[in-house]
Image 1: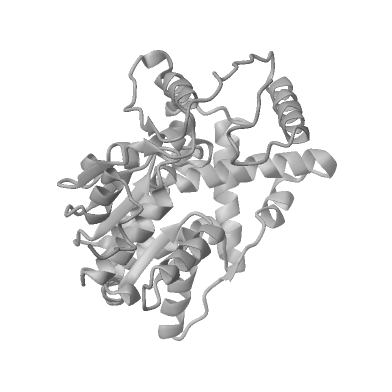
Image 2: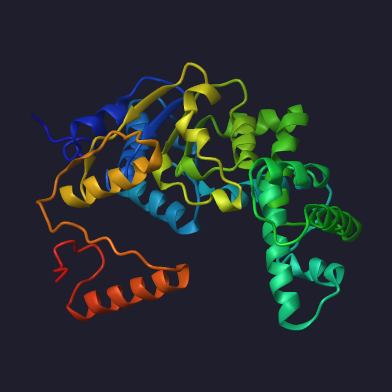
Length: 356
């Protein structure tokens, strides 16, 4: 039988994910299960089978590095055509600039740092100002990621039990004044890019038609980390079509503090009725002992255990659990452990390093 470079090095669950017929499709990929490999193989397989035109593919990643890696892997797989890959913000900015150019108008300038506006609004100076700016900017970013307007911030923060650095009504007022000052100066920030692009697709039929014609096949990486604002943009790009494939693992969701909502992945079938969900079943990175320990930790107090992927690598030492009295102590302890492992010759990705 002739060798097939798209499938010969894939396991059964990976092959099933690459060739799944469902749409929309969610691929649940636990840590170490070959997420990026499966995503790129699915794009390449779709192109080879005539299911997708690479020039009409839009692949959304969370970092520019990931976008570059994805394009590089696709080239290695022989995918011909210019797949468009980038972050939510970069893609939204490019589309907004194209729309402004088509309409022969200037897009407002991009604000690189919220502190340029928040500093004068807070009226503080020195180190105290730097801390206040950082904290206030973070709360505004959280609100905008959750698609919250200033008047909705206080209620949402209370409902989510979010700890705020200052009273909610003060943050809401600062948020409102910040938005007003941006409008006055004709500025938009990075959070606005998602709002503006989604609204443009939702309300401008000509713009929506052009984007949906150009990008007919939508792939999203790390879907567990999308925020409501990003999910809104995905829905806008998709329209009434179903050609959406997402990859992620809700157990690896780490951006809740910034407004992300892992339910977009864990409840994928509720968000996209009729969708298919497949799961990768092998871990190529961790020992059975590490997988078992992580499964126990992820079950938490709920007692609900997630499906545990099988281990491919050989058995290793049982993980040691160390408790620390404070977060700072834990940080220092982890740093010491890493330094000690490095001094013994342990390098990233080499699980066989001794723990003794």
